[in-house]
Length: 67
Image (cartoon, rainbow, N blue to C red; front, side, top):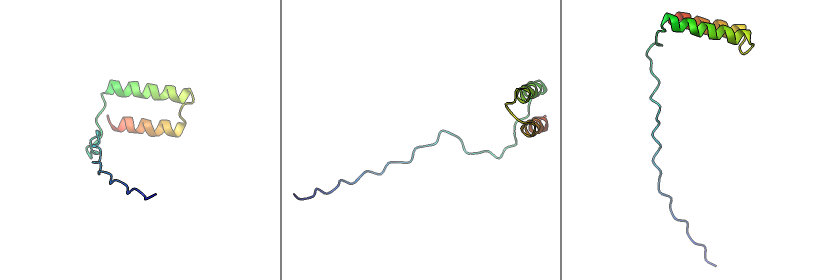
């Protein structure tokens, strides 16, 4: 039997990403009430053992830096 040559495959265009490119803009500022809610939630996660002290301190610093 004679081999059948393979058909060429049409090039597929690259899919367009739905996510925008990373921005170099500074992080948005938090409303003080929103920051307080975030800190309370963070403290609850610490108390329940979901995060450790170093994670708590790092997240807390980020929240406070955005005020």
